Image 1 (cartoon, rainbow, N blue to C red):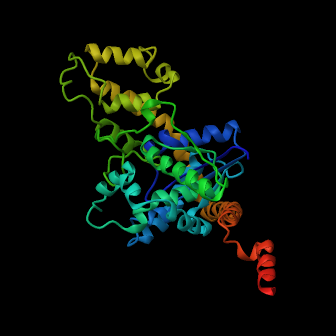
Image 2 (cartoon, rainbow, N blue to C red):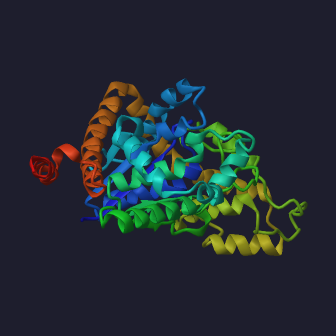
Image 3 (cartoon, rainbow, N blue to C red):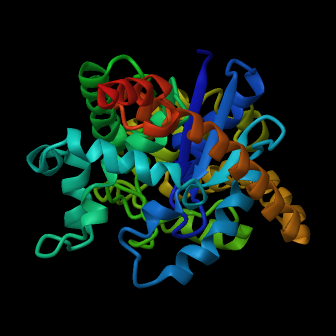
Length: 361
C-alpha cells in the first residue's frame, strides 16, 4: 500500500482560522510536497447531520461554503480528491459492521464524545448517530485505507478509537484494515487555537471565530477586541504571555518576514514577547501588528474564494467527480471487508461449490 491521507470537516458553517492553522494549511503543504500517493478530503455532511437532523438545510447550504474555503486555501482537485461523505453509501455499511466491535461503555469513555455531548447539552438525550460518530469516523478512515490522518489535538481520542477498531477487526477476521498514523500540527500554538474571547476552543456556535472569508474591517474589529492579559492595565506594566490570545495567534500565524514589513523595530517574535513581559509595550500596538499579519495571511484566500464563487456549477462538478472516485475506492475496501467477514456469499464460488457437494450426498 502507498501513503494515503484522509481528513475533512463538518459543513456547519464557513471555515475559520482555527481550521486553517490546525489542519487546512498543513493539507496544502502536504499536497504540494507530493509525498502521498492519494489524498482524500471529505466534507462530512452525514456526520454534521448527527446533531443537525432537524435542520438539514443548514448542512445543505454549507456544503458549498466549505468547498469554496478548501479551494480558496489552495487545495487542488487535480492533486486531492474532494468529496461529500453522504454520497459514499459504503461508509454506512462499514459503520454498521464496526458497531459490533465497540461497546457502549467504551464510547461513553471517549473524551471527545463526552466534551461534545456536554457542549451541545445532550446529556439527557443523546442522539444515537451522534453517540456513535467515532465508529462512523473509523469507517471514513479505513474505507480509503488511510495511512495518515492530520487532526487537531482534540481529535486524538477519536483516532485512538479508530486504531482500536482496526486492531479488533484484524484480530477477529484477519489482516484487512490499515491502522492510521496521526499527524498533529508541528506548531504547538496550532494544536487548539483559542477563540478571540480567550475561551479554550474557537467555535462557530460560541461566535468567537475569525472566518477565512471575513472582510478586512471585520477582521480588524475582531482582532482589536481580543482577550489579552487583564492585569496589563498600563503600558508600563509587565505583561503575561500565558493565556494571552493575541500572542497565541502570533505564535500560530507570524512569519519572520512580517516584522520587516509591519514592525521593523523588532527582529523577531521573541524580541516582541520580551518587551511585553518586562513592560513598556501596549496591547494595541501588538494587536495592530497581529491584524496586519492576519490580513496578509487571509487576503489571498479571500480573493481566490471570490474567483471560485463566480462559477458555482464548476465547484459542484469538482465535488461530483471526487465523490465518484471516493466511492469506487470505498467499494473496493467494503468488498474486502465482506470477504474477510465471510458475508460475500454470491462472490464466493468455493462456498457455493462446497454447499452443492454437501447437499448432493
